[in-house]
Length: 364
Image (cartoon, rainbow, N blue to C red; front, top):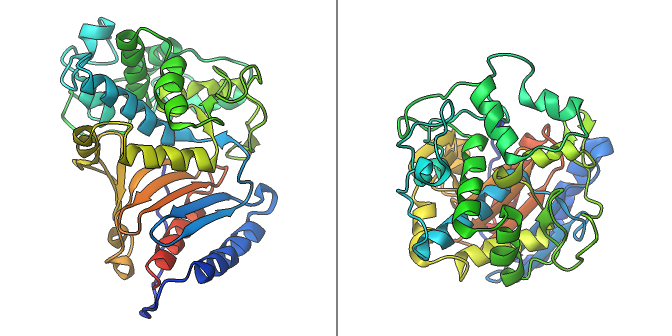
């Protein structure tokens, strides 16, 4: 996933008592400016929820579902952690012992943990280099009616890419690894991934407006056949109706709303997984990009690495997606932040907005 570096934003030095009204007014002003600059993309979808500060802020189409992209990796990891908590699988279980040989994709000794923390050695089918033919994203845009099965994605990595190293040798962000994690979940749970996701996460948390793109229906509207989602731009191509977007699957194929994703973020901090599992997810071992570090299915942002002017800001945990989607929890302000900027070209603006939100929460 290509992540343009966000520009620095200098906080002011003033300190005053927090005001939810000021927060709303100032963030509205920022987002109004962003919306004008985005032209045909329109308003981003933004939610900030903080019980500590008495905030339930939203901007844009609050109830409109959207493709959450790699935020879905958090849900995939949470499912695996539930199975680990139940003793059905271990993070040290070899992937091959569950799925059989994966020659050309993974080494025999690769573990479940290495899939989740991107050290498996697997290539990345979604954005990684290929040995022949067009890169994967060109196939998605060029053949919008194609439905991608998980095994198709693994086969793409096997035949069109090469592994990037030995398991545990290096961090390399890999959607292929998360497809394999989804297949492990299916094998261990004994049900299709989208059903496990629905029964173990969506229904228990009350995420009634969430589903798997092209694979299931919203929990609260069975039979709606996916409904209408917000625009989704791959470069300059609007792809929200493309069946080829089925390619994300366990690596990020969830459709959801800002409220449902805030509920997922809240659930992660409470009863969705054990305290020990959450500690494991938060244990940071690798750097994804400058300012973005990785644990097990969770990112941690370190704003001071973006700019020295941002030192002292909280380090929220969560995940971003290639479409400018964000789901983060700021423990300092007990704030759940969810955003959708709808486009692969909007990562910089999305980070500018996240920085502005953190400035306002810190009343700097």
